[in-house]
Length: 333
Image 1 (tube, one colour):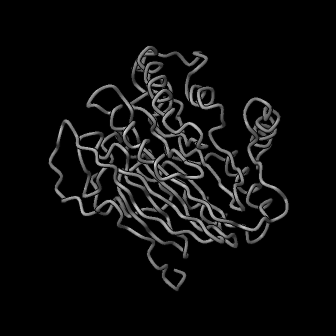
Image 2 (cartoon, one colour):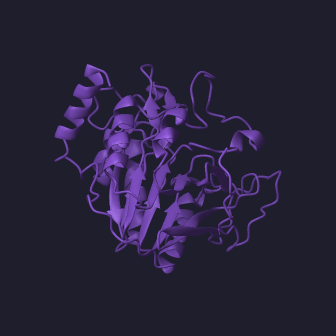
Image 3 (cartoon, one colour):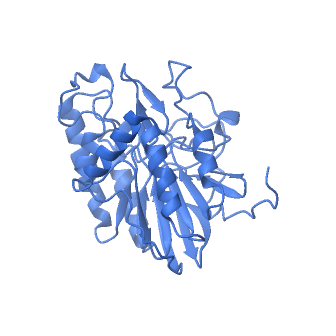
């Protein structure tokens, strides 16, 4: 790590009193217990298209399943990047009010690319705005954009995959300071502890093989569909008990195994941006049952019917309680 990166890392650590600690895990391994986790992502909450009503319906369904905790995988609203300040504040207020449906259930929030306040110059928001960039997310959810925590003998790592370029574009990368933090966090995790990693933008996915290019990518040099430096992150998992990587962003329900680790991309609460299913994946979320250090999961829909149906070239192929865990391949590529 360069001197500059080291100074930035030290400065970030020194600010730990502002938000919850970057890492809360203990130094001694705990016995993993039973835990129901719900990973819901890409709500894209907004007043239009009855999206707020859809989000509320999804959250009521989630609460009825009695999870021990939830992780919101990013893209809470549609959207904070390009719209004026007043619109952004309204969207944040709307989302937070709607999430009250989960009161009593711990909810951890992952930063999505649409959650970056005023990133695009067309928003009219200045770089000096006290909420600019990731500050709005940190303040509204009282959290850091990347961090870790322990629950019931499991270690959870929440990554920030959202980079902002000097000219205020979006680039999906894990920056050097965060990479160093991740390396240290994994090193401090007791051997054998089951680890669950989350990232809004997928580290590993086959989506580019069957989905069209990400429509927001006007610059092919930027990484907007998959993480641009997954090759730097994945080696850090070697020798660690990573039992699942949870991902969002593509709105597609998918599981890809790499070195026996399941990379689980969940379909979106909003489906095709509140216009129906997308490439066969209906609106929904992923339910995880953790027991004794192992994970099983399925994709769950919640009965939403869009007010603005859009033709899907793939018929939705998932019924409410399909998509159980697949048996991992018994080989290492």
